[in-house]
Image (tube, rainbow, N blue to C red; front, side):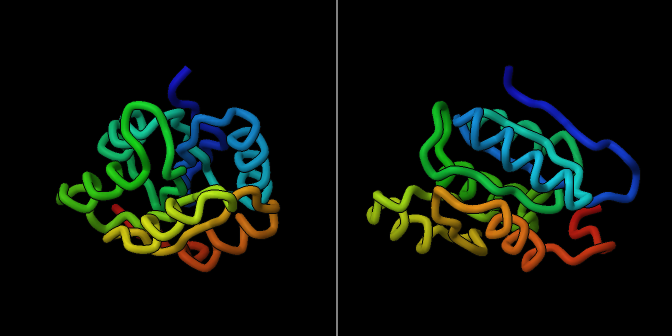
Length: 139
């Protein structure tokens, strides 16, 4: 399936969710769409990189552990490319994986770490803290 886009109205900030868990993607997409964000979904790090290069994205929220390219590697790639270097990245990690959390916290370019499982409120609060309403980070 790869990539989906929801709530395509103009003027909305675009949040990319990248994770290989379809249940998490569905609930996170619903929560963010309800709050007025446009959501793009990628099911692995490689697709996330392709989407970030092909469209305007204001924030990427991605899992550390994904097929093809993991979140840490994808974050490094994003920060190395001029077109995507300024996109903020929130890395998601499992609560039961302290090694992944430590790695995510040390990853250059990530602005926050979000521990899974998280509530809709935690996700929305994290997104709001990184992107400001009405202000697109990337043109």
